[in-house]
Image 1 (cartoon, rainbow, N blue to C red):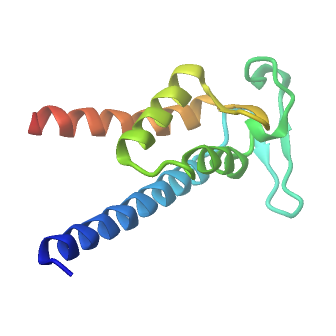
Image 2 (tube, rainbow, N blue to C red):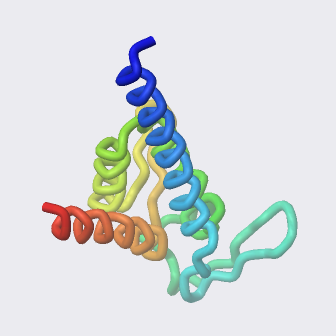
Length: 134
């Protein structure tokens, strides 16, 4: 096999590993966020949230809006099929603009302010990096 092809394959594999690690990092960052103000998360299984009425987010009663691990799962599911960094950035931008993770066949998961804030940090860091190198 040609040396350049071998190098290209190795670089492609490294890029995919880096992308996978980045997806995991984003999911872990969201999972590690504190609950929204007025929301208490149980420490037991099954996980549940106690939400004050004043803390309702966009009038949603769906538990996946308030539980950080459920938010992380939705973001991971949205990012999972992305095969390029550009695709990942487009998905992050889409989720922050819509404040939701939209799926063609499985509906929509609203994203709370803490999750959107975490996603914006990744977008802003990408924009800053691009500005420094552009």
